[in-house]
Length: 240
Image (cartoon, rainbow, N blue to C red):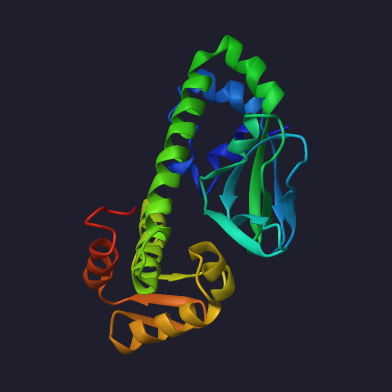
């Protein structure tokens, strides 16, 4: 099982959804939380259709949720960063509704769901956190749907870069300079664009002075222009 020191030393404690619990509730949760596992790049966390084991909290690294179309084409549903919870969709019918794979070396905490339900019967605050998580997940899906619904490829990519920058900022990292865990193909699969379009647009952003790209290393030089590009094509709505 998990040890209290694991939570105290967690690099993502500031964004962990359970951090707001009082000490007694947090200790109850820590008693059932499993020791973090390390997934190497490309290793699966779970596969679609498998029975729900638990909720998976990304401690560090990045995990992609993905599925396959009827024609056999892979598409990316979400990218989960430190502090995000993977597997919430499985609560509905007890089975995971997507695949989850580590994009780089990732540390994952697992919260066994049956143990969580038993603990929550005695400590309602645990369910309150779960409800907030599910509400936040709905809002995030709405925002990402708006991002991916842009007609302009450049607006989608600008919005995606701003979305990542906000995520790094929330986790205490630089929102101006960061490394991408995902490759160009995965970005294309997430945004519903051709790989060539993603590569060409990033090059154009670089030529226009908005960003600097070297492999997966990104520097945002003009966040205001990127925001304006993303928001103008999103009908003025802000995508976080």
